[in-house]
Length: 411
Image (cartoon, rainbow, N blue to C red; front, side):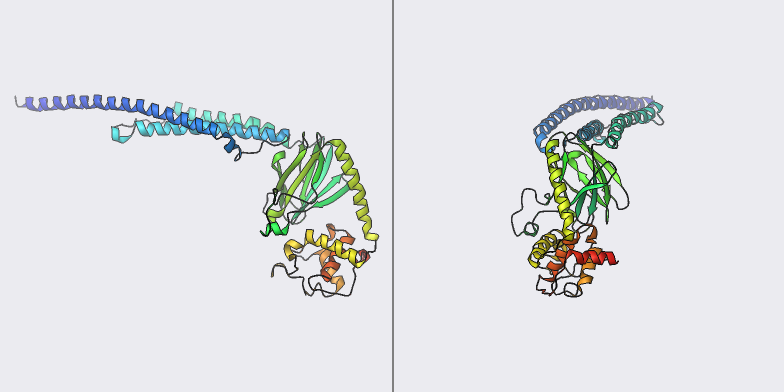
């Protein structure tokens, strides 16, 4: 008889535990229903926000571009993005649901299992299939991007600190026309002395001109440091490395002006190295090319001319503004100690041959570039003359193109 109270107490405890579990399960079921409604409301709200903010989101997305390759890149990007978003929704929804429904405060007891072969196979095969599904279109796009053969036009792109040189090459890769493309944003805009224009730091004095509906192959290299030729609307970006020739191509269907920038940190004026490409119909391109060829040949003849002091000052100011003002400043006072002043300097007021040599050859180990490959003899003579007769300098000499040619031939 002594065992009856103990047995009755144990039975009562079991009944209370069962009743408690029933109430717990009821609470859990109610919480699950509430949680499902809450999750549906959240998903509907997010969907509405995404649709309403589509235009705003486009400003943060990749550009769809103007070429078939850029469209393929954009489509590939969105395809992978949607996959990632889908994975994120599934994973974080499962995490959120599990953390809410199976939380410790409602008495949830975690299941215990180890080495489940089915689960291990699933979480290996499913990611593998997803990666293969992304790799197939990505590989197809990369093959197209690197297929540079069958071009209609070849343009060599050479990066300098801080400008681009474009050379139009013939079938034998010989230069038929070349020019430098410099930033045309004014120094007043850069130094906040005047209002900034619509294309601030994205405008040049001479854009690259290409024909529409023609495959253009770009041969890309660097002259001094590593640059990067990037035009988002074409879906192209390739490093310009000294001593290495990279290539990329574009075929533009619609006329327009397309802009880019050097996307490799290449020095103090890295942000002042824009790319502007003007795509025009073939007839317009042919007319432009013919006119540029005539002007190019006339420019090459300048080396045999003799200029007056006034003509040298006018041409020299133009050359200085395009090539020298960023470092030596418009007033010739420079930015010492890296960029020395020209006003009253030993170079600008000293031996003229040494001055010409420095402009032509540059100075190794400094930011002073060799302009012999960038400027012709007349332009070098003019900028030397301008520097020796500006900023308070007043020398009694005149530098002619023949002086530059004689110096080069004597080396």
